[in-house]
Length: 130
Length: 128
Image (cartoon, rainbow over all chains, first blue to last red; front, side, top):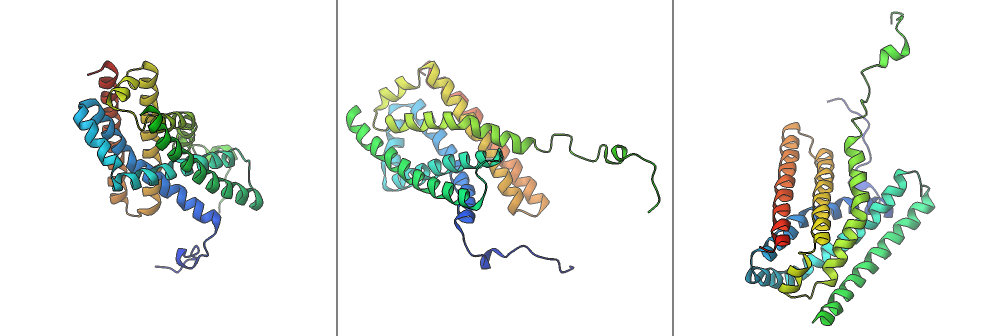
């Protein structure tokens, strides 16, 4: 094979916020896609019987279930916010190093904040409905 | 190179995009825009109902607005997910055979999941 110029090797490439957030968009998208069959199965359980629903709820409430839900919720808010960031880029807005970094940090902070709010509302909302 | 008498237009005609090459990119964006309100509504509903019991969940999914909203969200999310996974596969699988295999697998999985979720939502809606 002829020696051709190579793009920078990923192993020697210094990580930056931009590249980390870019690959995180992919990663979170994959995680969310893998969550869709589980979500559908949860609705299948709801449609079958009260016993199936309670079994699904006990899995969701287990230690593994809660960690999965936490990861999914964080992935959801991150992918949603960063997706909006991408849509702004698509129409030619928000370019430039400064704007890109500013929106990048905003997406990270907001994703964490919205995840926290969702869990607080979820936990305390459960008490209200009781 | 021999001098050609063909016009510039004649030389490039039928060689470029038929405006279909951007189809994947375009529908990924369109589905993304549709999913902004749908997913916020869906996740907010799940969060607010997270502590609800069986009968309350069943009552919720029997509203026609909820049923339509859930079907739209689920089909939109599956479609967007299939498009996204296809890009990932195309980027990281260099071998044409395995690439085709995984893209077809993701597409079939999407169709199965979409059909399953629609039937389940209809069953939940009619209260079976």
